[in-house]
Length: 171
Length: 359
Image 1 (cartoon, each protein chain N blue to C red):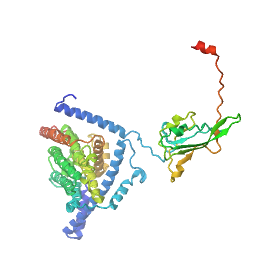
Image 2 (image 1 turned 180 degrees about the horizontal axis):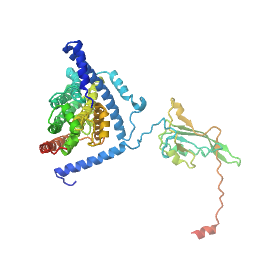
Image 3 (image 1 turned 45 degrees about the vertical axis):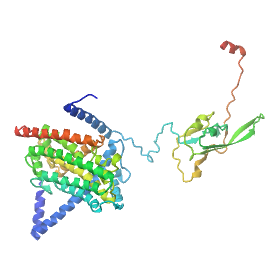
């Protein structure tokens, strides 16, 4: 702070006060930031990073991507996810885990996003549905897989072992 | 400009024609009382609504807009809520003084309210030392605040009231000094006469040019402090003293403090309009005959209200821009800056008047 004498102090104070007055009168005539919620429901825009409710996206053939590995259930800090799975035998005789029911407790979830990051197949994500209030606590336990949905079969990547020589030349 | 005293004189002669003089004056007093109370209520509603809207606009918000069209019924809803609330009696408080304090506030603002010249010939209290009377009765409000703080027997109100006492006593000086400046310019203490001169010779703020503008700015600062409004709202600083001197009040007793605060704001604006901006005098430009004629067709009380609300807007603008001062900053602003400046300003005004430099 530089030293100011009496007169300089008054002049400096008046100048800075006028700057404040100018700023506030500019805001007075500006657009107001208030969102009038129930009326603007159609035009409401949220950031993509908002986390409101967990969902499992299904494609147009009612197929999900979840392989019931249970990593999300393990990642969840407060047991909001409960996966029921069963073992089925595929056509080629292999045993495979299949999802029966993906239960998600919205009332307990703390929206930490750990399940989404844990998922190896991007089968779950948080969506923008924020009007989640219900009158019964039990209604907050959601089943994320749609009835009658099946696992979306990934096109199996064709693994062709590379010849030994090419590997060597690469090195 | 229409002289309203024609109407009042006609009404007086009408009454004295059918009844003795004392009865006529009694009836007139009653009508005046009704007029004051009605105006008081209407102005309080308008000011509270205006304050909430203007405050919201300054803060990038919309303000009340759900109760009625544009939130116009919000104030009525608030008042009805306040009327239905209980007036709590504290065990340790001095109950008589505690109940009396809000009425002191109301008394002060009613009496100052009565000094205001609304229109030509329409002033309730109008006599040759009107300015002195105005300053004197506006001081009664301090008694109400100190009583409220003392009788609540609680820390916050006590501290708030003491701060308020120090603040109001200090800033009364600046108000008095700026009014003296105007008295020097106009040579009279009668409010109607001050306004009449402004109607004849131009508004004081233009006629007195530099000293009048300095006085007007000092009046705005001191007036904001007199109304206990931000940036000088430390008698009721929410963050430190919950609500200051009216912490222990509830229901309509709190409502009276609230009303008195807003009416003091209006009185401050109205007084600034009266002594600086020409009261009910319309705007005149020498030479523009057509324009001046149109302006004089607008009734005086509309001019008066427009000017008063303009000053009220200035006060609100100041309030919602600046942060609150500390008590030592507040007192040093008054005693080290405003008082010396207004004293010099009186000297300057005296020189200006003496050498005939007024416009």
